[in-house]
Length: 292
Image 1: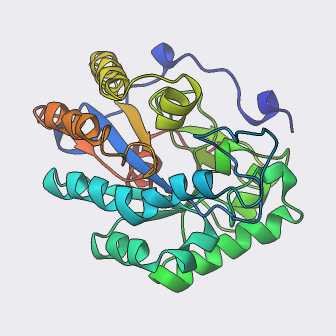
Image 2: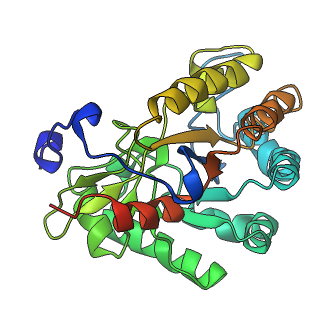
């Protein structure tokens, strides 16, 4: 299906109002992407250009740059989640569960949600068997946590033409790849519809720090600017805001304080709910429009 066949245009201003529980005006969910990069492959992102050009193998400096996030940066960020009692969502490669068991254990101990993020960190259009990849990711998460994932985020938000069809057939209930709204929306598939939960490309540390090359404080500035506008938008109908981080980016020592300041600011608003993706899903299933 074409994207326009999966979802019809719907102006947010003309929809029936949505109300969150306990008088909350808007919901914020925070997604931590934990990925395993294959040292035998070209690094998907780089912080240092090889002095002689090309794509060296092994690429130790860029592999190590990422690995720092899982060895150090994640744990630095985790303290922020703990200090502000923010529920986390772990978007994790299937292979990363075996590679980084202490991260898995820490997320389980805090009852974080686990979301499928591809079995390996690569474009889903280059996966040989997409259904097998989607199924295998769910299986290893279920084996590690005792619970199958309900949500999916494609690596780099990549999809094939069939991804939503395969996700619903393999038991997933929501996807976050379709960054086109501030409320959950239904997507059509070849069988039954699937819900898309609002994600973000704008408040995403990959976009800001690695592509646009902003200074660390931009993450805080943009997050709060986005929060304030969505908070205003939510006066009559609930809105959802996402914050997206990677341990090797926002977990770097020179950036962490700006990540912390976001929660210092938002936590002052008593009518803002911090939720997980599956909590947003269950809320929308209970109060939103029924599947088309």
